[in-house]
Length: 345
Image (cartoon, rainbow, N blue to C red; front, side, top):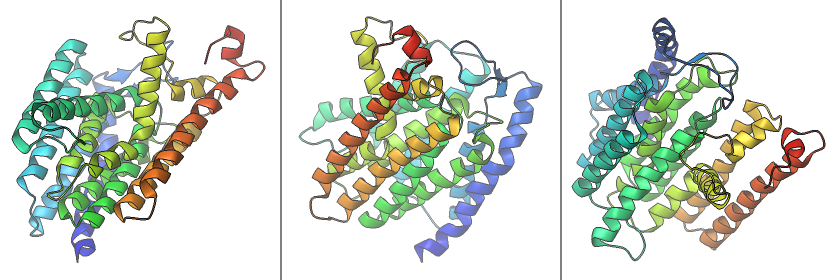
């Protein structure tokens, strides 16, 4: 029954996103809202950057279709979508006219704090009260900005959202949470419609409106299930681990090197792979595959497979180490850009 009730909303989310994306691309070109290539860019031609609005509207359209079909959402689920939409509006404002990073962070913290104080903190292990609240806000801000940092090549962020959304749908089925299933499949279907136009070579980028929405939305999904324990935060980390790992690894590496972490750069692992000569589609597929590994581990844990928690942690750790070593190997090849520069790992 739940599958039948989701067919129409999923179709609406996908088709609205797919249909609106080229319209927003045309609108952005007419208003010169373009990402113009610079020495740090991974693209070569000026590209519209407002595509994220299309899949946000697609997801909202899917929710409207679900409501029209007689479905309803819990207050928590509605608040999560509302808060994520607030991040989309903030990102759109930045896409239209760049805002100071400090101003964006203040608004992000305000939205995240309001949501957490309203619906409650995430179930982090051994943490409750104000510590749990602070950590939940930090988590939401971290995932939101990780998506912003990682949305740098064609198909990357939308591909991660597609895998994570499907993963949350499967986890919702394991939990018996209809809202989690619904938001998961819509969170996959709408970016999938956008991905038709964002797959390399991309004809439009999602911009901060899209990356901010996706990061916050996926980061807040652990708050949706009514019956949950600390394990849902482990699942949330597994579903987005490639972005979290790349962002955290890069931040620590730059701190160790004495770099200004607030300055623009091209030292993310995925950016280093692009510089090494890999095409966008291969890097995006690689990261989607890594996300699928995490999703598989989360689902195995959710259905209580013996040893799933330890096995998934081990596999993800090996995958993270393998990603780093692969980057180093690519950069160490004779004639590569980083080999000529003598770049450190």
